[in-house]
Length: 122
Image (cartoon, rainbow, N blue to C red; front, side):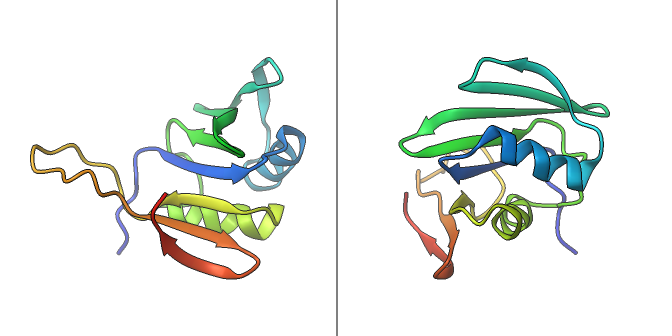
């Protein structure tokens, strides 16, 4: 059984807030806009806060589900669903985040796009 992450974060190439909102509504139901500055969005679905930062990393927008009240257990599951719905490159961490003193700083990533799903170093 896959461990359920307490929060999820994925990265969307040139994420479009209107398309993301439409996708989220199709999956989660009601989405309320709390804040929209153009570059940053804060939505709420039930008791879950969802944040989108349009300029998180180069051409990528960050989509963060602060509390994981989604149908997905992991970042990768959310990334797969986003890729299917939005057809834009999606990136995510290949595992959950843990802080440890022996952390080597090597975090793996997964890239999903028209060429498939593959690991890479970001």
